[in-house]
Image 1: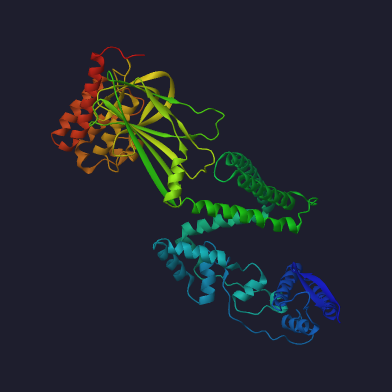
Image 2 (image 1 turned 120 degrees about the horizontal axis):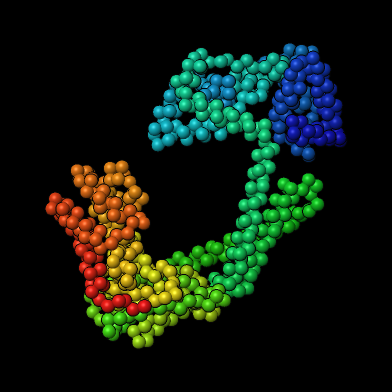
Length: 580
């Protein structure tokens, strides 16, 4: 039985029989002697080695099936010598392969490489890619695909393959002559933007090649920093996960342990591979294979959780409370700081004309689950409390889940509907919500002092001595929304961003108001942020709208709201001072 020897050629390991190994050594030594006086001898020898490794790789060699002397003799005969000492090597041509042609490139050399392979003028190919780019970017997409798929013809072997020539030692030493295309400079002028893009790409790629170590160092440390941030985030998440009621406590701890195992294993592997020149920490294959267990466990738990939350259901409970003396008080209890199981409740307030002397409180309980029975049980697991005493509604800002129940996306929302013309005393500031069609208010911030509001029409107005003479933030928001909806296209969202610009500059003014752009700008100036709108300015706004409404009756909604604000401010001034 012949002895097998391993040898590395072009950074690839091959197994060769002992006789073949001796023949290969002799062959390579002769090549080195022939290249001794060549100026690019080392470069040529490396390319010949690459060709040799390519042919050896095609033999599908492995340790139990080494390269024989006969096989190696045939390969050496195919490559030959530079000076062809023994016999003339048959130099046959093959089908040309497509490579990126860097000598005739404009951007990356895709069109030049395709031109050499297909025989189509590169100018036609470039025009085709530009034309296809207007078809939903198809040309750009195809160009990127070819760019990433084709190899560069930056070696002698690739240059020969691009011309359809077999790479022999003599041809590799001679080099493949690359023909510069006619009118290349003219094309680079015509496609100047793409020429500049190609030059920029070449500068960046060359910078990366020559300073690759620095870039790799930066990327490696950025990845390390992001990994540390991710580990800290996941550690906090594990703590919060164990405080939640998603799975039984023992399963939650088991999943946490599985996550910690994966985190530690990946961290050790990353540090060992990229930061230790001499790896002192050995990660056994058994530990790596064991990682499949936590991966399966975590994946299975996620699949189970998703399957348990396929359906959704909500139930509302509505209660009416009588209001005495036209005054209603609203306050909220905070969750205890040590209560990690508390979940926030969403609150909304609005006025309802149908209500006379009562407040309507609708509590909606919602949950996910699988099947009607599971949905009902999940909703019944919600524990939420509130109370009413002497016209004072006390609500909890949070809800909890009953013991021995599980978190399945339960949430609670409360809608408080107020009657017209009552005084609301709240422990929290209210902020108008402009997202829907109806005017609703939500809790904005808790306050140390009681805040007083009055209800009128479909709005809730803040009541104090300062705001009796000017409009509040909520009133300004509603007024701005109505202004934008009346005068600007795309509603109020983009209009808020364009208010600092004049009506013509913003290019969002409706076409029908172009002739009245000056009057629209006068109204707009009142609504610019940080500008106080007092009663006098409201009166002037009303006059401006009255002038425009003769020509545009659809502005009635905006005028109605301005007149409503004037009425509210006048009534607040006529009343006694607001309670503190």
